[in-house]
Length: 130
Image 1 (cartoon, rainbow, N blue to C red):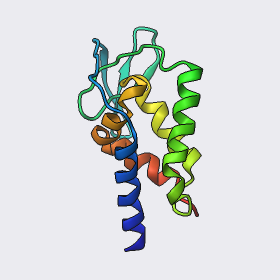
Image 2: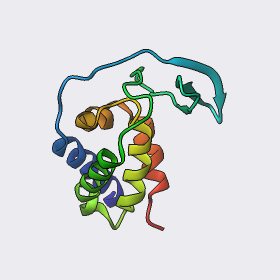
Image 3: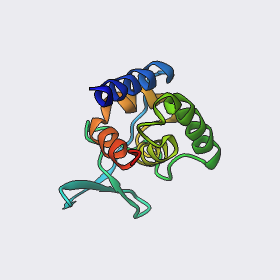
């Protein structure tokens, strides 16, 4: 029960702290082949990334800049620090941000977190404290 409470607390915390604005979208080339049941999108650069579960399209073919990623990583880690006894904040944030950086501009992290529940769960499980 405590585990579920902390997970829910983390979800609420993340959703409450990230700023929201309107999102821009662009077209992508989708790769229908699945790997381990997951679908991928092939960017125009040839890079293969996980397909967003809610149909969000790529907004940035190259992902975020190092500066954007660094800022968002720090911000995310601070946001989930209260549940550090359950998950490793750095692992969770690195996992999640690496996936959403192609689909959402940094200011849309709140939307990304709400939209991409499969990625949230995947990253949460990878970041569990043993």
